[in-house]
Image 1 (cartoon, rainbow, N blue to C red):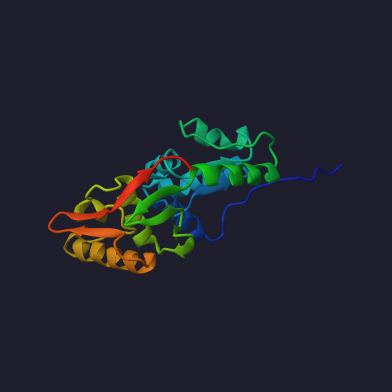
Image 2 (tube, rainbow, N blue to C red):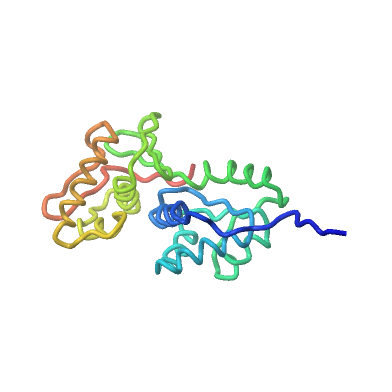
Length: 211
């Protein structure tokens, strides 16, 4: 009798999408990453390790980005490192999708009122007064850092650290200014992001906890 494997995992031929996903996860550009096998988890961690980003990736999963796993075997490479995971009651893809659909609207959205405008900050977009507005990675990273301290001034030096990619020190201030300009343009209404002269930027908002 010939045994035919019902499941096997093969390495990625093109690793660039995985590298892009790692970058998006670390920057918080995605709300969640869904895993259906332990080898896939090991592959992502290994690719991050090769780039010197494994700890940053684990920190992202331990923070705002949800690591959703189809079951405990899949989750083990993360749980053994102290990373919390979202798992469905039954180890099925449909159950995993339903668990994510329940979890993200309640836990994956930051809600703010800034300059009398209602904001809902998601993984790669923001809802402004009920209108969905996608944001590129740099403006989104800046918005999320500002939203970490709603109403407080965040310095340009602090904002520079969240910009995707490496930014030379001499061009850092210009890069932050460009990200702020693009952020304001994408948000639409004025008065949401305020400039505090010689100090940085702030959201003119009141923070609302909960969904």
